[in-house]
Length: 111
Length: 112
Image (cartoon, rainbow over all chains, first blue to last red; front, side, top):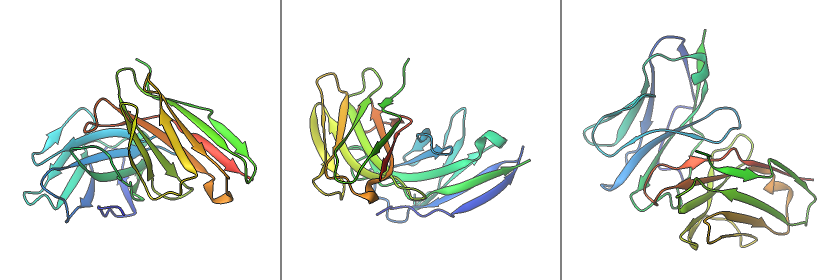
């Protein structure tokens, strides 16, 4: 069973920030939050991950709440190529054992 | 640097046959993961191999099996194929078991 919940779909105007939420209320202390995206039937692409601190890389920013029960992936300037299904997962430091990616959030970037 | 490669890209089998899917991880990666993605569904964890050993498996029947070779490449075997096995099978690799995983493009298995 997926340990995260995400809205099934979201729209975002091109050039605007896309904020994708994820709830992981049962996350344990040594579980990381990972974000991946999958563009139409391709293999998922790693975006970013974090434990408790906010993280930023060239693709996105990850904001994790202080209680770690939720997080938000931020794409600062969404482009049409960011249209994809975004998956939020939690994973023990011991690996992706039995991690199931839920149905994710289908992000549609609108011109 | 080559990414994770999977073969074949597409595979069509008839019910009751066996299917073999192959995965080559990124050079230096020792962990390999297999996932099944049925149409319109999320990725379901199938198997995890690390250093040649099966470390964990998901809730799939024993006819789903695999192995990891000394060069860390991996093979997924599905015996006695059923129509419901039609799906995209994705392989991922990671440097060690607790780092980000990189996915291949998948093998589309169709059972008719």
